Amino acid sequence: MEIDILVLEDNQERMKYFRRAFPGLVWSETAADCITNLTQAEAIGELWLDHDLGQENYVNSNRPDCGMEVVRFLEQNELQLKINKIFVHSHNTYAAQQMTLALQKADYNAVLYPFRNLLEELKK
View 1 (cartoon, rainbow, N blue to C red):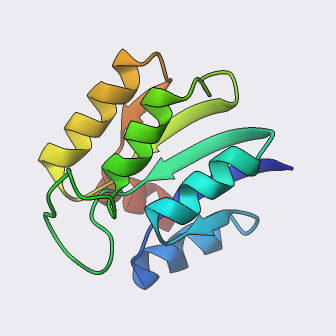
View 2: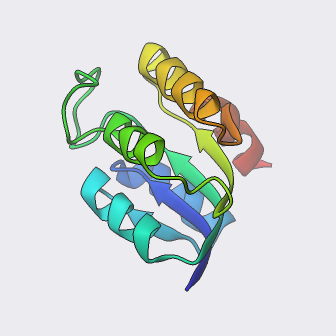
């Protein structure tokens, strides 16, 4: 299965914008679900990663239920050729920067793209 856009996001309001802009996206609400989608997909055009999940804010990046868990999985598995581009869109600036740097260090094509910037684009 090929996925054009895989989104890790727990916020229903954000998902409204994502779904309106990208109707065919695949949505994961948990890190575990996102990892499952990553392992099952043959190719992924774009991966959008949030950090804070479970309706919590500024969670510890060592927890297994945050976006950093997906980053740790990607660091341990060479999926660079499988994923075209990764956008880290978390409001948690520090965690988003750490995620982006870790992905870049692991040779993934990753950029930090905060949701507030994305929201401006999606509203156009």
